[in-house]
Length: 355
Ligand SMILES: [Ca+2]
Ligand SMILES: [Ca+2]
Ligand SMILES: [Ca+2]
Image (cartoon, rainbow, N blue to C red):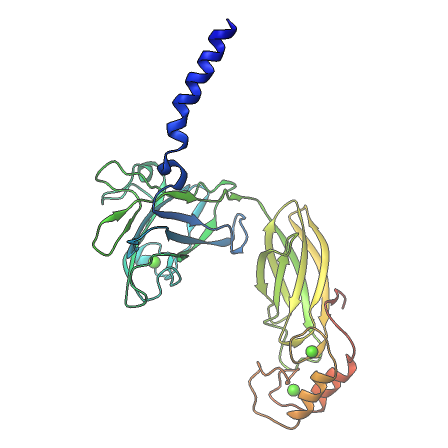
């Protein structure tokens, strides 16, 4: 028996040797392509709010002649009971579009298709789009760098609207059965380039919690509108972003059951921050904060550099509200702005979340 086991082992090794030394296995294809749907780049994956993901194309050549990508056609199925595409052109008459972007292509974009199907399309399509909704885009470019041989970048940004809790079910349909086709890349001669891999995150839509609060600007002569407020998750990823209304109030939809840091930021002011905001109920009100003026150079401290730049423009008027030395946004740089800076001299943000 021992002899027989040994003989089988030897036979197996011999059988495996040609495979292991086959260069086609070791090196893979000479041209390697992938389609990557990014994780959430902004917004929040919650019911009643929107979030964005980017669609990236990547191509790498490891031998000459190199294959270049001149066209990208993608079919992106998703579960329309959970998410919908938020119309990029805000025109309901032509259905729901996504935003086609430069990045992978650097020339003038030529868009052959940009449409969302919530029912089986009338045009040739992959089988997934019979049962799921699908985003369909086709894009090429003229000018620029021509065929893309070794690069990775976005071709589209999709804004999704959360409709119900559950998995968004986003995927990329690669394989079509003959005609109708699946997603495909094209070279400059109109020949298809195989897609070697896809990468799509699992995105779950959650019930929304709301963080409410108020941000007032010290010394403002206009109103309290336009302060940027963000909710950050652990690791400082932006989960939700908004701006204040004229009375300084804001409302940030975020996924329930997590802890956030809320930051308020406005041109010319120190940041203010509230950490450890645990959103477990439907709405959490974190109260009000007053942000402190005088940080003209945006380094989140008020020091001699800021005072010098206010003095340097002292007496100027008719300025845009975006002028950083016009702290109180009245269009004039005068003693009121200098006093704000002098009063906060030596302070750095983020300041405590306090009235
Ligand atoms: Ca539209
Ligand atoms: Ca400063
Ligand atoms: Ca002023």
